Length: 319
Image 1 (cartoon, one colour):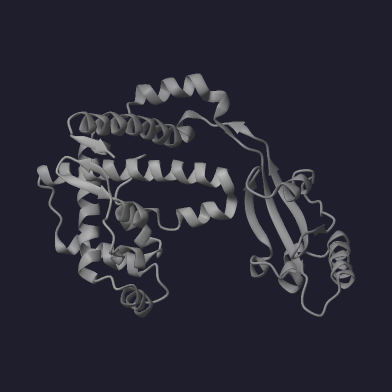
Image 2 (cartoon, rainbow, N blue to C red):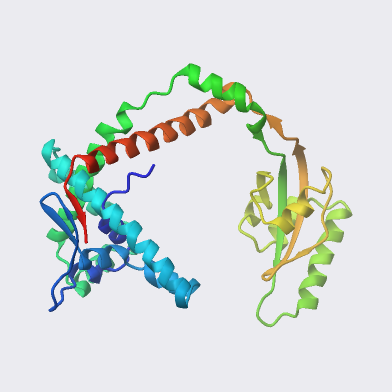
C-alpha cells in the first residue's frame, strides 16, 4: 500500500546516507513547499533522495537523466508533503508513542548492521546523534499508527467478496506446473580447466544414469548449497528458476537425468523425481491470496481518498 511514511527513516534503516541528516549549508535553505504551518526545504528533499539520484546516474545520462531526476524529485517532494500532513494529523489526534516502541525500532535498525559497534561507528562518523534518530523513529511510529487507525483497521473483506472474485477469476488462479528437483553443481575452480570440469560433470551424469543413487552422488560430488541434503531442492514451480534451467528441468520425465547445463560458475546436473501438472486452485486454497489482494486494493483506495482529503483541507503551496 502506498502509505509511504518517514522517507528519512527508511534511508536510515537501509544504512544509507547517514551523513545527509546532519548536512547544513551556509547558503539560504530554499523552501520548496509550505504545508500548513510546516515547510519542506531543499535540504530536506536532498536528504530524502539519498542514493536515488546516484542510482539514476548509473542508468541514464544527458537529457534523459535530467528528465528522470526531475520525475524522482517531484515524486519524493509529493511523498514528503504527504508525510508532513500525516504527522500533523497524528499530532492532532495525540497519537501516543512510548519510549519502549522507539527503543525497539532503534534495536531493529542496529540489527541491520554487522554489529552494534558498526552502528555506533557510523553514527559517530556522520555526526548524527542518537536523540535525532529517536525523534525520527518516534515520528515514523506515530504516522504508522495513524495510518493503521484511519486506513488499515477500517478495511473489511467479506466472504461474499472472496467468493465472487473466485467465480470471476478461477481460471487465473492456477497453481503452476511443478517438479521435485534434485541437482548437482560442479563448479569452475581456480587452476581447473573448463574441459576438466565438463569431463567431471559428464562422468557424474554417467554414474547416475548407470544406476548410482543421485542423492549419494550429490553428497560426494556436488559443490552446491544442497549437497549435504543429497541435492534435494524439493518441489520447484515453473517460473521460479532461470529460463535455461526450466527449459531443461520441465522437459525431463520423472527419473530422468539431464545432460550438464553450463553456466558462468560451472555445470549443473538435474534429476526430476516427480512432476505435478498445473491445476486450478480450489476456493479454500485460493482464499488467503484473494483476501490479501482485495484487502490491499481497498487499502490503496482508502489511503488515496484519505490523503486527498487531508490535502483538500490543508494549505499547501509548492514553490
